[in-house]
Length: 582
Image 1 (tube, rainbow, N blue to C red):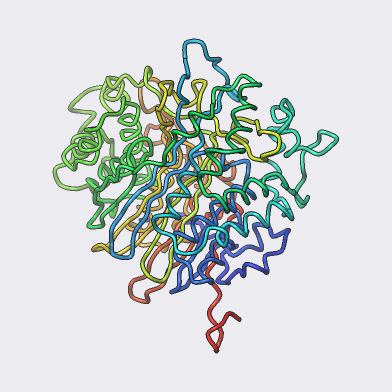
Image 2: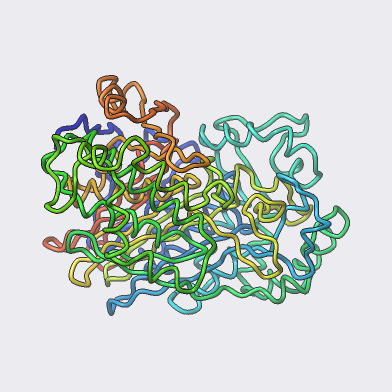
């Protein structure tokens, strides 16, 4: 395939030691690639990746590393996630098994959508937090180190502070007006004069440190019961929220529904609704019908965009227990692939008609937009396309790997925090996620994902970026499998995303940064194919992947942070000559 595949200049083959992370570490000085036979942790903020790698140094496993990194990133990237939010976790165990944990926020007991405000943020949007329950279950069932050890880095970052990276400072400043509306959020995320923190400012979160310390000593019970739950419930009752003690006490992290498919001989594994792993599998299995070898990179990207659009149309349908069987069916994927338009000159798999043939056979009303409108897309819910969420991946030297996605919804979540507790809540209610029934869990584009090769790990990844999470994950997989790129280069390649209208595919957006996106010539080639194209130069607009690739030949993990973000890949420091740490 021909392409202007971009290579990012910040990839560094260095190891970031936990104790040596300078408070002002920025994107250009953080290693975004790391290699190690002993495992790697990759996260959207260097301090979080370092916290996870420290657990590997202490003899912990990938679950310990993931829990440490997840608590740490709730402190150092609060605009994107929180212990008051939700998560989805995919686990590959050393014996080759795959399991998942659903820590999704849910609708509180007693919530009445008929009388509740249709708010975009604030106390009425707060559901039951799931992040803590998800992390506690990961630790209890798969971890090996004491919880107090695992949470120590996060507590330290909160208690002693850290310096804000430019991106985090910018996101916090963007929500300044809404954050200023409530006492708790204003106290924690604005200065005394009401101004936001600036890049390089030290953010100290003493109350958050105390909340984390209580969890480290008392586990999930300390959060979902006792004094913390009482403070949460009292604060909600006083400010129009719906979260109660009873709802907190009743919450449990559930088993994720694991879904599987295949792509060009590799097994692909994800989590079903309320996550979107089945949609990624469907998009890949639609694309698998076509052969990219004879296509230009732009033509293949158009096939990927259409495959994603078909999958996202399926995503809009109401969920059912049987949906994953249909969605991950190869037969179903081939049926949908008949709607994909491919440039006539492109070489495609035998038995699949070309774009020109499809148009000639079915007339002007052919193609994805006409076919997909029958799915009723205008009346069905699709999550917003804002660039929220965080993802981290962790692996150890014994074959365990974790893909963990954590979020609070839009930037700064509900923009409220309970005074004395120090953390933000996720947006769950009010129509943002289209759920309203008590106990219902928030459906999202979250897609922790794994690619296995004869049962062995090959790729472990996930992304941030709203609904664009799905498209980012799918394109990372195709760049590695179809283009033969190593994961760092795959993450540096330009992406596309389908723009969905009320009648289906309306066109697609293309990553178009001046140095790291599709060229102007590529954009014109997309348009010549007959698609409405929206060039988008904004950094991080097409998802941010933090993932791992396993090189079975050298038994080495390669961690790669998305070059469009400020994250890092960190490996544990090697043992010294006497068996201790250098």
